[in-house]
Image (cartoon, rainbow, N blue to C red; front, side, top):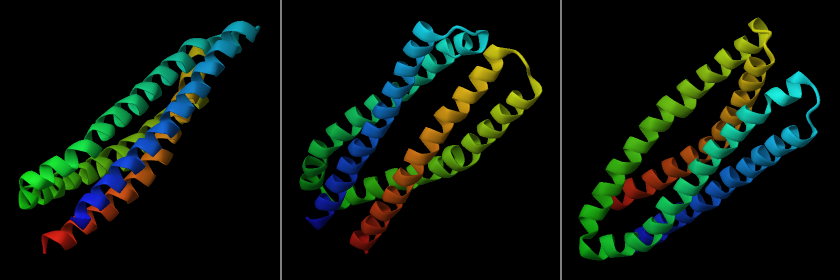
Amino acid sequence: MEIIKFATEWAKAEVFSARFFIFFAIIHLTASIGFWQLGKTEMAKAYIIPTLVAGLLILAVGVGISIVNNSRVTSFAEAYNANPTEFVQSEITRTEKSMEEYRTIVFKIIPFIIVVAALLIVFVDKPIWRATAIITIAMMVVILLVDSNANSRIEAYHKQLELVNK
């Protein structure tokens, strides 16, 4: 029954993590409105759409993570009570898959996107492309920061699942 506590704590921590995505999304959306209302230069105006798009994408991620993990909090106990062994096995499988996705997406693809965006800033002189590259870097850094913490949490949760499985 201790594993339900760990599972619930992990899911609640994910919901808390989603709030950071939502917070940064609000910052991006507010910045987009600011550029729209106050931007006088071509460069400032170039930030309006990229910042809006980044804000909406980050908001979608945050809301999605929050919804999924809020439903998990209630379903963990039901799944465990139905079949404890199957619950632990399914969680081990799910966490292994998630850790592999983190290794690929968060620690390989996102840094690659950041490098490409940084090169765009250096080699392209159009304001819209520079603004897009800068906002892409900002969005990727937010995702990298939040997801690196999420990866640490899921690894700890996976270790607890492995201990229970033995």
